[in-house]
Structure formats: C-alpha cells, structure tokens
Image (cartoon, rainbow, N blue to C red; front, side, top):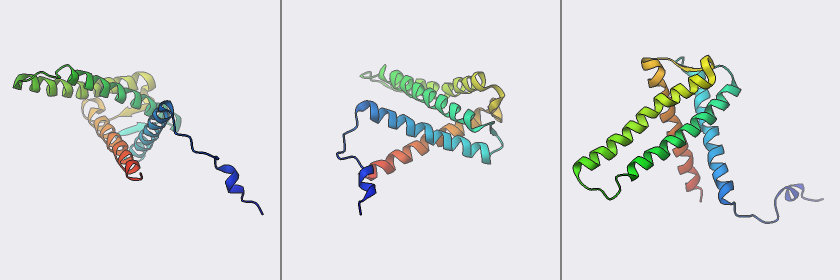
Length: 153
C-alpha cells in the first residue's frame, strides 16, 4: 500500500522569492479586506455592497488605495527627516494626519466613481464615518493576522 499523500508534497521546499512573498502579502490583505467588508455589509445597515463580485473588486481597490495612502504618508514624514524643532515636528504629524484623513475622501469618491450605487456607506458626511470605521477594522485585522503569522515561526 502506498502513501498517496506523499505524492502531493514537494520533494524540497523552495524559499519563496520576493515577488512570491509580495504576492502572498497582498493576496492575503485583499482576502482580509473582503471578509471585513462583507461582514460589515451583512451586519451593519450603513454599509451596502450589492454582490460578492462587487465586494471583491471593492476590496482590491481599497487595498490599492490604502497602500498608496500609506506610501504618501511615509513620503510626507520623510520630508521632515533630520529636521528638528517643535514646528517641524508639528508639521510632520499634522501633514501625515491630513494625508490619512484626506485620503478617506479620495477613497469614498473612488468607490462612488467605480461602483456607483453598488457600494455605498451611509451616515455623517456622506458615509465618511462608516468608511473610516471599516478601514480601521481592515487595518487592525491585517495587523492581527500578521502578528499571528509571525508568532508561528
């Protein structure tokens, strides 16, 4: 009798390339965002997504926009690297906050332009507060998964 499960396992374990690691990081992040978005759509009447396909596409768009936002935030903070003084410190954090907060308006508009009424958030400031809550939960969920993964090592 042969062990069929052995045939399914590779003979050697190759170390993943940087491209493979990056793919898995973004793939996992999109799936986490998809789950979070769908849970909010199912259990909170302020978040509406018409179909699973739309939520998948919205999760991809959200992931791209969040990564761009974080890159811009880091770029803004980098402008103040090596600069001392209270005013520079204030400007660094204030401008980073402006980027992070302002990006939510861009995200809301991008979702509206891309999906129309198929994805929308209802509430104060045209759904900005529910969007911020959903995005924060997405980021927290991603961080929790990363921390759990690192503890497995």
